[in-house]
Image (cartoon, rainbow, N blue to C red; front, side, top):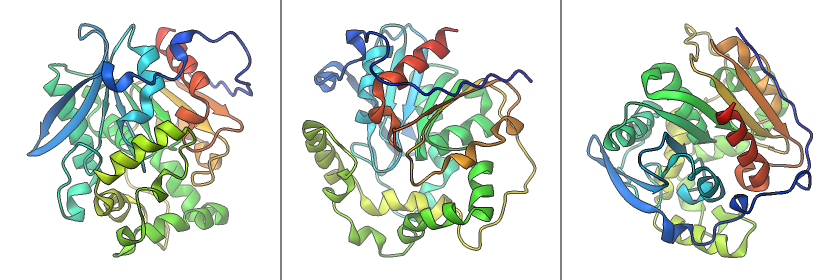
Length: 303
């Protein structure tokens, strides 16, 4: 197996930045909105770029919506047809009731529904946080839909499983997930609270609007249905290796997902891995280090 590991200690001031990498405040006016049917669940997406270009599908995490990818969409749309979805439960997508409707296999099915709806056979898949869980799942169990895989701040599920079972600090830092798994957890959050991580004041307004359109119970059903529960045990099920090339980008100041879970990722892959770690960037690395993340994605895709 060919292994490429790039561990960068970079600063955003290095190298002149192209104007295309800057924040795109008008992207909501530029994108084309659409909806795909996923077994009766309507999945909203925002698309930018020439439909004839290679397809990139971007999948957000918690608490978020398609707009999280605005900078990357603006920069990548010159060479790709970039489609960012709202996952079920969020913003303009449907919000089915019942925790069983948020099983990760159904979430992965939402992505394949979008790909098929767009008339494509496969796509470059980009996922962050829960979008990363969905992306790993899609790559392992429906690899025919995935050309290349890009994961932001979400270790391979085996890595997270190992850390939860053996790392007391990861167990402590995952208390938030155990809180989210409580039956009444959705009654204790507000749209304003969920924007705690959004730094840009104008973006924060958009997030509050999107979260008011979302379903808090549905958002937390991701944790209730799919996040490991105590007592934590390592995953010892038969290994399904990821077949396509993988780029992982991880902000090292992520307090929820510690970087130790990245170790040994290469053992669960068949193709090459490029790992980029970014000091001083947190969990929402696509915004904390937007330009650097975009640069690395563009470079990796063009290699």
